[in-house]
Image (cartoon, rainbow, N blue to C red; front, side, top):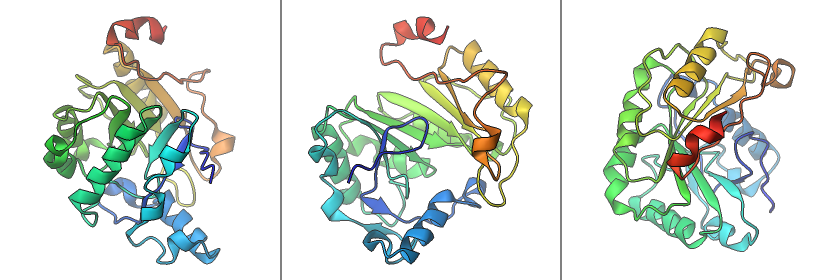
Length: 246
């Protein structure tokens, strides 16, 4: 039950909820859906229904059993704010994250409207980082929704990046991740889309993390952008941010 992750910007995954439904352009070639079907074929009990939404209550307290501090991506195989999951379930999971204060939890959603609606139902603990996915210019409103929440650390996952985002307002944003799509039928990411976002992050003093170029073989295309790795991470004390970027 180690649940260590190969995702470059986290350490472990915790999936008390699984399954999802496509909501926008970035969902077309969903890696989680492919993985869920593979796990279903392997007989994994959590994926008896494949990628249909499911709640796994025996896993709710899993982070409390991990005594060594970890950085944990919550629901890598779902979306915490999927409409199928009742408010009470989401609130229970926030309570677990608050109790497991020695860990850092990272949440991503495409359903920023529900996130904003539920914002006041949470006592946002400082160890919970909240992010939204923005794959192209049609979904920048998700950034505005995120900005209005009381999350202590707010971040963007621009992955799979499907278009340029030339006028990205990063006010109130603590971290930006950029990555290209990987796997079968992966759509390509232009180099100047990535470098332009990197430049906007540097101009607006926001940590930038370049995850991957993607493609059918993401290991072959690698993670270097203009000859180097970009592994910047958010800094809670924002007065320290400038020093962390250079």
